[in-house]
Amino acid sequence: MNRFETYEQFWPFYLGEHRRRATRTLHLVGTGVGLVLFASAAFSGDWRLLLTGVVVGYGFAWLAHLLVERNRPATFRHPLWSLYSDFRMLALALTGQLEAELRKHGVGD
Image (cartoon, rainbow, N blue to C red; front, top):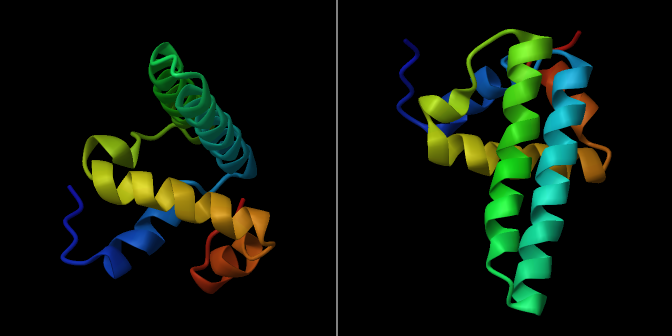
């Protein structure tokens, strides 16, 4: 089992657990749709959208790990760092910096 003292140690591990482009794509879709559902819940006051956002966000990610990456989601061992990393990966993708970050840590298909 991987043990990390700091987030800086965890981040390269997280990226390595998302080696395949399809895994990252499914994560990004799930995270993005989840955020849209959270925002919709905030504006509409419909709390069910919060639950739907969690199910969609984690559903896409966990399916990616099960069907594409064939590994165990880091969420089970490191839930807070994994959640933060999902948002970090989304931000890097949206700003065009994800590929450089993957190369920096020797991660790719």
